[in-house]
Length: 256
Image (tube, rainbow, N blue to C red; front, side, top):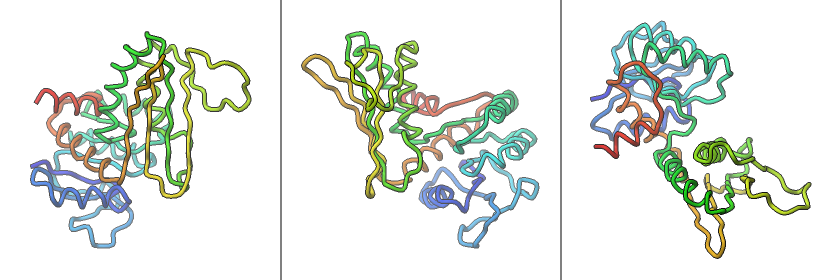
């Protein structure tokens, strides 16, 4: 049984994970950290790490970069691995996270979906085949009209996976409206669509002579991120110091 402390437990993802863990026989949330507690979560909620008085195997953090320093201090002091799902870290904070990973296990990922992270692996293979064969590569992402950022962080992560496999040869192009010229072979186009209640959708297109290959991912609910975070927590609970990623979680599943 993996005992979890849920940081940001009263937020949207914290509540999603709380509900998912209720049906998981291999995990249990023993406490939460949040400034808000409406008494409905079914476990003790502490306003700060200083108040925690329960034992746990791992922390899942879906809160804010503002609390990361205190969370890392608690993690190191108590030798408890932490799954960082929070985004928006400064360069200074990223360096602090890297330094902390020398003392405790840390898994950091901007997207916890097992599907997206598996696709990143597939894209590396696809790029090594199609990129060298002269295929053009485009990413089209679609989201509901309330999403603030464009392109999505996931679209950029997919692009980075492609570019990593291509040794950084591609230039990201977000807008061709000011151009009137032929597409360059080393462009990687990234387009964003916003409208209605479209679920998060990401299409990667490899377009070559007389054939097109498309890889698509659709996120119908936040459950996919919650399930990924829980899988990461189970994986990380017994790991030694180091920086881990969702790719490590996927490899552990592949290798049994």
